Length: 364
Ligand code: G3I
Image (tube, rainbow, N blue to C red; front, side):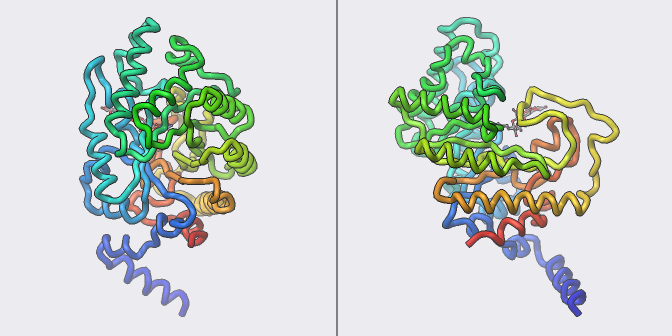
């Protein structure tokens, strides 16, 4: 009898129009509306609303969004005096139209830099780029974005500063300078430092040193983003909890800004896009479907994570997934191109996975 009911329910569900089906799925943003914001990153196709069903789905599930690429300097600022704001402006319109707060990502990052910056060899020229970029971009989106990832990924794994073009030419005060310029250009916007693996002790210590340095200079920093690119069965819950407590003790909001849980084998950690792995016969083990055992582990990992986020909801202000569904994820192409990955809560057709239900049941 029970089985017949399940079959009947499935038949009813599958014969519903997709939009109605999407409406019948619980909403993440509603489930956690009293706890923290729920975000996603958005790509060009989503920002341009090329598929109305996807747009409706995003608006129903999320109340915060981060551009996956369109606000990075290579795309916004391709020449010394050339800015291309079209897609970033569309993102802001998308947010206004669908009541979604936008987190700008990112003002200063060593990666995805414009070609002309990679050819700069003088301190003066780099200082000019750095200052103009922050003033122009933060100034344009003043009052239009809720927050900025002012500096992204400035740390090495051991907590020392990454030897980026900014550190080499501008010295170790460049991070504080970036926050000062952002604050001047966009006074009402929340300002964050964002990194991956900064829940790990050594990198966390480096991150805390950055935060203290900014504060000691009398410059504002409102929050710290822990990206949250983790691996199934290995989510570092104890370090995450310790990090929430330590960052919050400095008076900062804590957010999980690029959450996904990798299910495929890999021999590189973190999210350094400069690292690659060679493809071999075993590097794409689930081209057709995720085995049930991994699906259940993924659900258990997400459940444990969200229980932790809820335990610290007074300190955690936002949880953003790095992609709407599995098909969108950057992890299909990193560190090996063309794999079939399953790191998010929705499958390639926006259908909820067991991990979605293990999370959404914890809300409200
Ligand atoms: O736009 C070009 C296109 O013109 C070209 O034909 C194509 C060929 O490869 O590349 C396209 O650019 C790609 C870009 O995404 C836009 O799709 C780049 O190759 C690709 O490397 C780039 O990847 C992005 C990556 O950042 C780059 O650093 C991912 O989509 C994006 O998810 C990822 O996001 C980062 C966060 O910003 C910071 N934290 C880590 C996270 C994951 O790496």
